Image 1 (tube, rainbow, N blue to C red):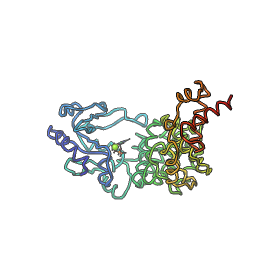
Image 2: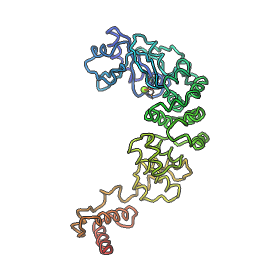
Image 3: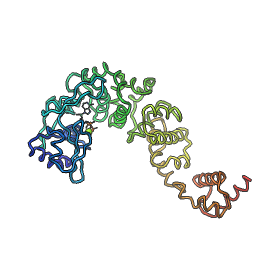
Length: 399
Ligand code: ATP
Ligand code: MG
């Protein structure tokens, strides 16, 4: 067993000693069987939240109304969720009611896909009620139960299906795919933030093509904000090798560039997806570098303005759109920059006021800005005397 599970064993044993059942469930079990690294260990238990809190001294109520309590142990947090069933789904998303139950099988039945409905005992023994192991073996994403019903009750699962196809390089079982085709329009009922998370994971997966094909063919893309008019652009992706995107910023830069969105239209598009302001600004900065690369006008100043990390993201994406510059060239340009940021200048506003006798005000800002540009471009040495004489001369010329 992976160390993450080994470390959690005492917790499982404590729950069992108190007379309850405890199992590892969800992605960590799936990923362990696939020999992939795991992130969070989820535990499902027959104990009710109050019962868990009696067993362990240190817990946090992270989602107690859904049955989730986090147990704190040697610096780690373990989410335990009481076995539950869900019913209602009046609005095609979250269930109206969560009912705690004492049986593992009911809990596994509510889960989305067979590969996500495996449970593992603390000893490593696997409980597989829906042929999840067979589907893992055949690399298939298949709903637990009837596909139409499962997507109709929670439309987000359709995005999860394409996301897992991309992450795992799995095929979507044909009945499951049909279920998505029949329900794709229901995606509109889902909060954009939740769709966004799945879309980002799809684009960051190891085989984006696998997810993307289904995303397009089932029409899911049509019910994503602002995407319905870009079928051709999305389709063009399924024929070529995609860049490996490592962050949500890279994903959104890639998508907006693919769609030909810049500046205001890029910002507008990203706002409909409710991305963070940080992502919106970063995307614009990276786009500037991509444009410079594709126009073969990449200057040190462009790299300086973006910073190394954004410039490298730009390089990776620009290659896809026909750019030829290498990753190492970007690193070289950055390495050779005379300054990496403003604070590296051998002069600042205060010194300009004192030594070059410039009054505080707009002119001061203008002079500093010009100095920064000249130094970055290599037209002016970053030495105080030279910077002062440049400033003095500029002030004279500006009158
Ligand atoms: P990841 O590796 O990305 O965390 P995961 O399978 O663990 O993948 P989570 O979103 O963490 O995905 O959910 C944990 C488990 O909860 C899933 O494996 C699945 O069993 C169940 N689950 C999550 N979302 C849904 C849903 N919308 N409908 C049904 N079951 C779900
Ligand atoms: Mg998980």
